[in-house]
Length: 44
Image (cartoon, helix red, strand yellow):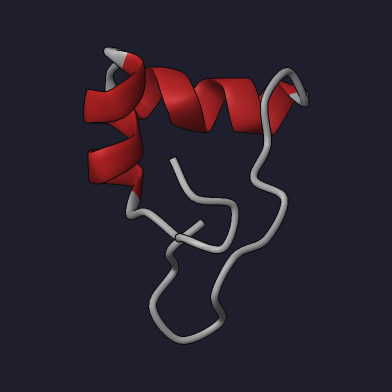
């Protein structure tokens, strides 16, 4: 995985083998969060 590459939450869920809901929950509770989020596309 390249450092400068961004992924949609769906792509990230497939890479991590987790559901989208799980990733969003982890982000909400502060367990895992994206280092950056593109303002226009939502890619992280």
